[in-house]
Image 1 (cartoon, rainbow, N blue to C red):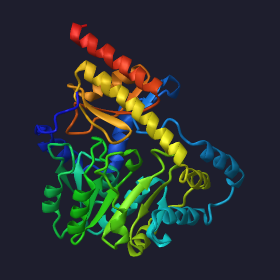
Image 2 (spheres, rainbow, N blue to C red):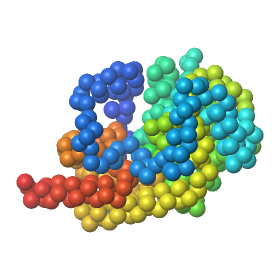
Image 3 (spheres, rainbow, N blue to C red):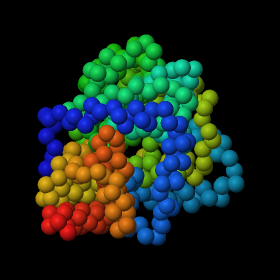
Image 4 (tube, rainbow, N blue to C red):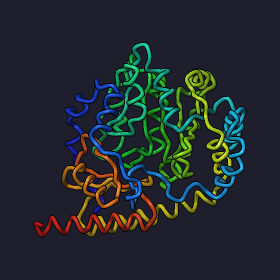
Amino acid sequence: MPISLTRRHWLLSTGAVAAGLALRPIAARAASVTQARPALDENKVRARLNNNENPYGPSERARRAITEALAEGCRYPGSQSKALEEMIAKAEKVPPDYVIVGSGSGEILRMTAMVYGLQGGELLTAHPTYEGLENGARAIGAYVHRVPLNDKFEHDLDAMDRRTTQAVRLVFVCNPNNPTGTIVPGDRLRAFCQEVSRRSVILVDEAYTDYVDDPRYSSMIDLVRDGYNVIVSRTFSKIHGLAGLRVGYGFARPDIVARLRQHRTMMNILGLRAAMASYPDEEFKAFSRRKNSEARSYLYRVLEDLGYQYIPSHTNFVFFNLGKEVEPFREAMQKRGILVGRAFPPLTKWCRVSMGTMEEVKLFAAALRETANQESTGK
């Protein structure tokens, strides 16, 4: 059943896990994960539902572009990144110097963390949310404030406003939010950005924007056009299906873009060519949205049938209340060749499932149904 959005989810008020992670360097955290888990046998994976990828990508246009670019693999990308920036700028009606491309939107987030987190800069983010920016900030020693989500599993904008002091140089908003799949309506987020950007730069991560069909939602690119202290990041990893080729992009005022460029690494020519072919491909994006919606609706019906509460999603994943710790469940699913999302403290009894193909989602649904039946019979 869809979860009631009026009850208070008290789990979000706990800060124990957050405090435990706050001072651990990102490299140490990554090492501990590597040591704790054996290498995954890729040949045994039947359903990859853990990374919010588009299983239908790359598009045919992108594949042709990749093939044609292979002969240039011995060359540096040259002006290809600038060509992609100009294409995006024209489509979004901003000057080219308002756009920056990077190796995935993860690089856009890391560059932003470096610009505003170095030399004692403080950052502020919701919790739980996508951790790319937070991890990058902590890796360079920046202090990150975490503000729990509200009782609708959305960003608590009022609380974030109150916590944004003069010491906070950057505020991060992931909209739609990962892992909850919720959105902040455009009018509310726009008012927040207009007010808070007087004190701090705001980074709005719109990685899943292409999946949203709620009329309340809107992008914050118009605030960039109007000169506000706002950065918008997007990616080719989701609806474009180019996660393995690492291409992302961001929008900001030219002075902000210039600071970000100082920290950018070189991109690869295959990813850039694929992105340029995929960006205007509205037919492929419509196809991907339709397939995603079909798989998501199917999973909703399964969860309702089994009595699991879930949060209605505006993305290509669903977050549902498993009712028990997710890590043992995740390990059990992996033994069946089904990969699902990790735990997102403090919501460690919630499971995030990406929308794969219908066949993959049905494999997961059958495994979920089997484990639920075993628990109900005590086996």
